[in-house]
Length: 239
Image 1 (cartoon, rainbow, N blue to C red):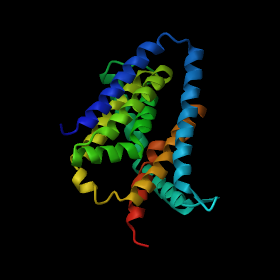
Image 2: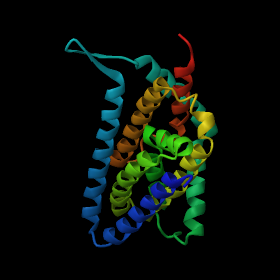
Image 3: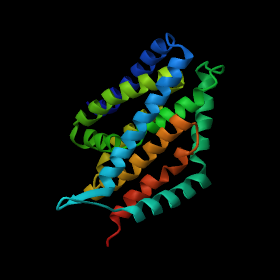
């Protein structure tokens, strides 16, 4: 079935949101605060692990680092583009619209929960690679694995941040669905090097999501999203 991986991933996020909502109601405020901190620390280390994998190499037992210039240029230029477009503002306005349309106008943290969760489950190589494989080969195994991870992440996030997290299923459905639909066009562009660069920059953005979870909103992560596109473009430039 075409797009089955996207459907499975979307359903897992919805179920995770529902499970987190009902379980979260049983927790006291201090429990939710501690859970939010634990979730943030987990996201931080997921981002660190992905970034280090892309920047560190071991040769003859010696660890060396690289890609510093790529990271700096992509993040700086990408953030500038994102700030000009104000992608974060678009996310927040959509979140506010969802908040009202879904009858959650009194949920004060709805928009922050929606934006944070959406960025966490949308950024990363698994979503892109899985959707391309699903669209070209009908192989939805990567997205099925991602669905399990997303179910756990969204369930925990919903317990600590609120029901807005479950609505991250919408951007995941749109993002993975469109990539699956246009997979044949994207495949030639997504070389191994492009995927490595995308994973590196994506992991750094995930780290920034973790920063916001632990220390409050310090970074407008959505405005940094163009950096991922620039990373793919950089991989296509002949050197």
